[in-house]
Amino acid sequence: MALTDPKLGPSYNVEETAFNLAVGTDLPRWSWLETRIPASDVKRVNSQGYPRAGLVDAHARGVNGKHDGRSEETVQRPELEIFGRAMVGGGKVFGAAHVVDYPWAKLGKATVVDIGGGIG
Image (cartoon, rainbow, N blue to C red; front, side, top):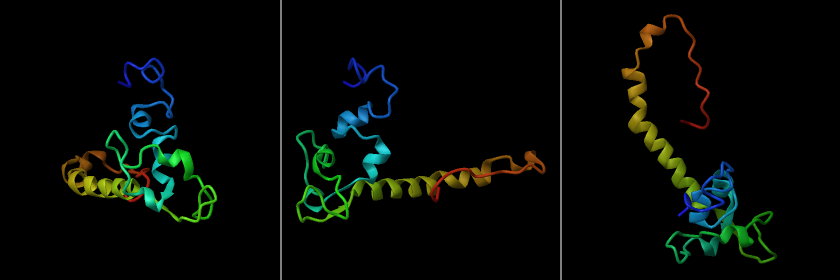
């Protein structure tokens, strides 16, 4: 559906992607992952079957754990922790091959610099 969309299909904009369409947000993926949401929305599921899609844009951009003047606390989006665990798991599955299989000896006295972020 996104590929044939006249706006999303040809777009290179990070706010105009299939992801945005799937979860109902105008935020880039990383901003969406880091957004806090109302605690009561954690278990909500939209009509497309994706939990919490679109809820953050409507009312969870609050300050100090509050949103839109309501007293309900906000919580970290569960998808952020899931993504972090997936990155750690992927590193455990695929990381050993870099150490064992790469021909490091052929580099001689070269310097190798890890410019990745996080723990991966």
